Length: 432
Image (cartoon, rainbow, N blue to C red; front, side):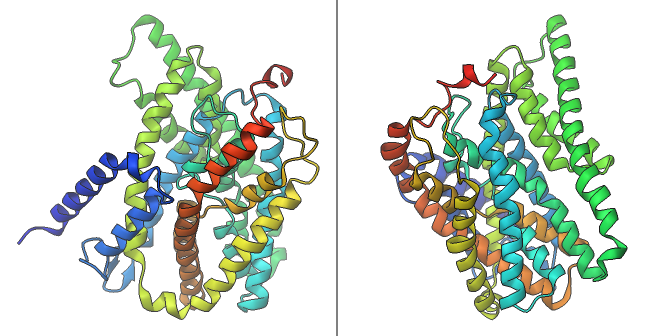
């Protein structure tokens, strides 16, 4: 009898071959690669061949899912940072500040209100659900993000920088929800939460991301002057930077996701040779694509029909509010008065504002926060409810955003991006 592990390797290899050779056709279809991986994951899961299993004796392996998704996210947020050129030019970050400073809190607390009023959760559980579902996904959103370091479209820039940052900055609210679930007397932990989980962890993430990345680049450049590294091994500098930055930041109780995103910005901005970060970006993007395959296959294998049906009503309420009301209205509010760069318009085109609202893709970041919550106090019936709402929301996002991303972005490029010229090159010299 053939070992299941060997069959898994065969199927994954066959899948990679098919999507790689067929990528030219797939890219033209209103169909995302993630949707293909999801369908294959379902086929390989308990309702198909049973080749991928995260459950043993009906016990879900949350620790394994947490570690896998954690690694995928840190690779992806570093990639987001590497795609952004000239990060010190402050005006380009205005849209990011709006999406993080307004849209993310609006999303968290609006989801929490929906969970409180319609699902009967207490405030701790409701805020935790909001924090899990609020971050947009940097892994699955590649079709709507910056395509390369020369792409400076403001819609793509906003979605890329948002995806790179909100996977880290939702963390304080995850902690808030977990604290509130364990102890509904906020007075006993609120000050500690503000001091450590809000102020210190964010500050440590910013500082460590800058310092560690600067140190690695400096060492790399000094050594390269004396003796160049093997060309085949040079790209691993980026991977080492990700792992060192993340681990050292976690040691000092900072947010590693935030630090890794900052490290990506530093790498892009610091190297004197622009070819270095470009080569690193190509390597990291390939690794990111490979990890995306594995993660979405796992998601497909997790799905069970009966729990999806049992929590279908709750999931439907959250999905309708999140995708059709909370995110679109939140994005509209967040972009009030925003004037696009390099445009004759005084305000963003209405369609651009709605696209910011529509492309709130959920995915691997939400899976990570869910697994993290299970490892730090989330359990029992409410844990199951939050888990299946999260799984269902991600699946629906993979389907509807995956189908709509290609045609909508093509329409945007033809009718708005070219007309408005909402790209940055003409203004970069004015932003110093």
